[in-house]
Length: 290
Image 1: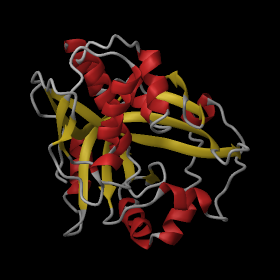
Image 2: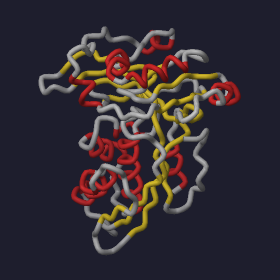
Image 3: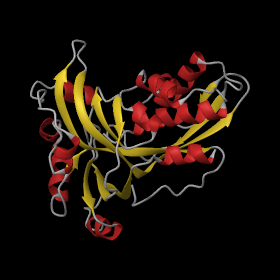
Image 4: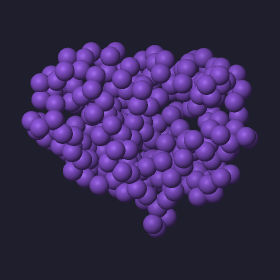
């Protein structure tokens, strides 16, 4: 990955799927069904995948790009399109989708969830389905806990399993995001017996005063040493943080120049990018443009 921002033109068929960062992540409990109760703060960054949609009139959802290791029927993009088809009558219920993939799988920065959300939002618009934001977010939740925040497109304080969202505006720092050469399976992290599951809830003002951590970090650093190595390297320049369940680690900087100074020291063969934090998603901006 190179230092990059969203640079593709807002062509009629091109829709952005930005990355997100979990600025902190506390696990405060567990539901009877096994889902973990969280507190986190989602913020978008100006870097991500691009999805291209070409409408078709035969009712088929066709994936025009390969996703290594992921069968077509398991691809969240395909599942999102078919799910929308099944829920509402659409005027043109067919599409060919090509994904320009830049976000790493298993990186904890929302690649699959963001792609699914962009598919729902874009096809709701292109197929003239007429669903409002709340309805799309509810559909998105059935695809994944992180999908609703991408659908809504605003930085948010999140609780529950991540679906109870309160929009927030926080500093739009510049971030250096390092992607170790591994994929961290979320299920494995949440099943780890050493995972902290009883963090005390905090308030927004406590986080802004410097509170908050990622409860998954200790487990991830132990199970995936390459993630720990990336965090240790980043600590030379700024406080490192794990995003979600990893594998990506990130740190904030006051300017693009400062972040790129650190990026220039990246060890050979490592992947990383510099991008600005955003309180409004590029997907939301794209929808407004029509």
